Length: 202
Image 1 (cartoon, one colour):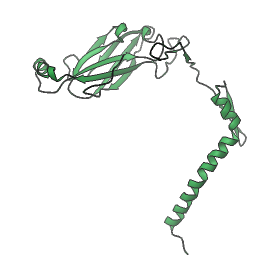
Image 2: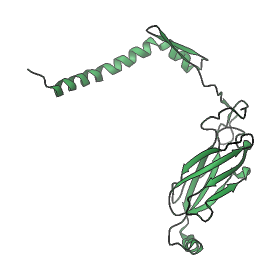
Image 3: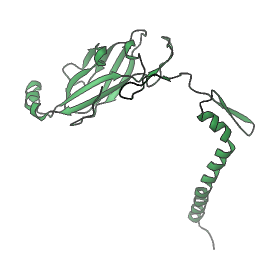
Image 4: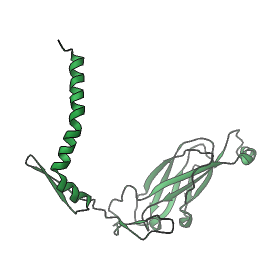
């Protein structure tokens, strides 16, 4: 029986599907000592393959867990960061929620002069790291250009730089976060999803 190219391809694919689990199991067995060391939090793990050595080290940013608060959240702490050192990618982030108040729609339409459905939106800058918000001087929010005041500044650290606004459509909000010890702001963004009853934010 002559095999067509399609039949050969299907045969190779079937063999590959059978061999992959065996290959993975073999790799796990071969490197089980190194994998155990890596999972146990070892400071450095070396893998040797065909004469080449691969060294895996933990991140240079050590994040120690502080005591949990009453809600079970664990703020993260960092060693002191110098002003010229890069910050972790998740050091600060923008969070938001929205909700719809049907009883307020006529008031909002009269206020804006536009016949749209308006959602209340709440925006904050937050962090998983203890003390991170204390380093923020102020936040400059860049809203959609259709707003009467598309650029708004918030300095209310106690409320996580809370912004309260209305929205009649979804857009990408930008936040320029100015830190007390850095010249250039951090640029964060958030897609402003509109929910009729959005999640609670701190």
